[in-house]
Length: 140
Image 1: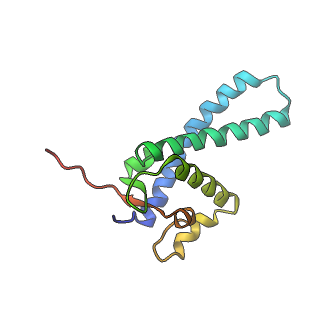
Image 2: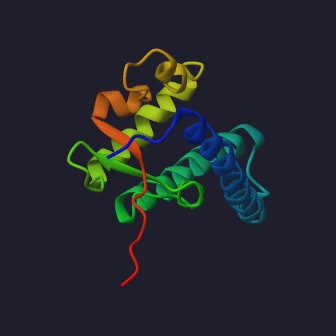
């Protein structure tokens, strides 16, 4: 298993943001249509919780089902555990939570590869997961 390069992982992250923006816009539109009468502070807090949950659902389902989101498919990157298998639901959920905490701590976990001997994100180091280059499919 060859780890995906750092530049490639950061590039996929930027590409991922485009997918997320589309998801967030759709969710926000639907949310606004359904909750226009709620008070502002409650509405904002509820929207943030929904967007975080929907984002987590997107990542966790993709990681458990195929090990790839739309962006990582395009960049030929796959998320696997230490044995090279797909993550289970618990691993994927914990990875999402740890990545969220990393973002809340000024992105320290996403800068971690600059100092890590294997160039792993902090959440991947803690969970013993890694982003690898997807093996080329062989034709029959």
